[in-house]
Image (cartoon, rainbow, N blue to C red; front, side, top):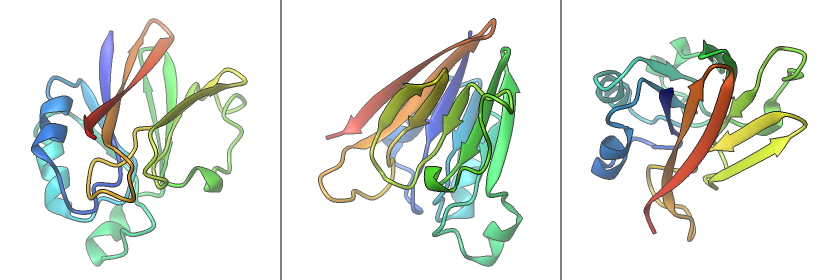
Length: 153
């Protein structure tokens, strides 16, 4: 089984709790609103990294970051987008089993029509009373399981 660490909405703040949670990941996905390119270097030092640009990633450094990304691992297609409302593909038709998004800052995991929609929540600055959170996918032999973790209440 491969462990894919999930993080989003850091907004320039990479907390030690998030780094500790992501340690040991085989791959990391950042679902946008990065806020600081140095943060990506820290994540890439842990594991290979797939990143998408969020609506707040407007500085020059972010222009090279795609709005969507696709990762295929362990027989599972994973599609990454910041804002789920902008999803312009039909996941099953595209061979996608998991859609990872951010934007709302709300951790969520919903299986709909055979597609797992995962939002790891926000690992950066707190918004409203939402928890500081991250997540993971456990992937292997065409199977996938998602877990969300509250890093700080």
